[in-house]
Image 1: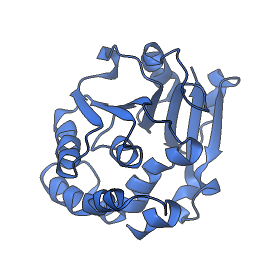
Image 2: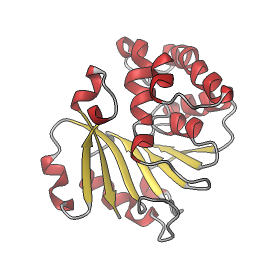
Image 3: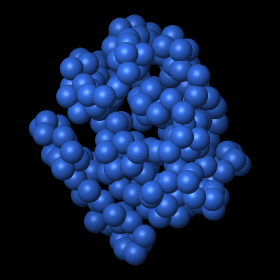
Length: 206
């Protein structure tokens, strides 16, 4: 939890309490439904919560921004972002029902009011959003193809509407089709921990 305060020192007491509650909730739910690898659960705050919050280092969403998290799994990056941006609206989507159940239960337990969940494939979502976010769900070209239809034309933020992805590894091939519309930054620009040296944040204008 201290690592969250290290990079986001200005959060409210309610947000601190919500972030602090995540560990016990995820440990408990993970013992019933495996959404985070067993050996990785002790790194919850660095590898999952802070990693999700890297999106907030790229952009501070304005109040009322609508976001969809595709392939949210146990609720990443959507749940941490919904805590950080209580006046934005989030739809978390996953095709695996038991993962959506974990994310729903965690969000309910910490009293998140700005978040909804849907057990479906992203192809089935018809609504429009300012941004789609995701964490290493699928190759970029495939993801862009699926979510293009969901990006609203109305702009409310400093960054134009599009896709924001958290990825690892060599992205050269994935980024090729988006030379003019994408940018990738190393997360080591924002966070000094070893884990982030191989991680990137990718923004694609859509």
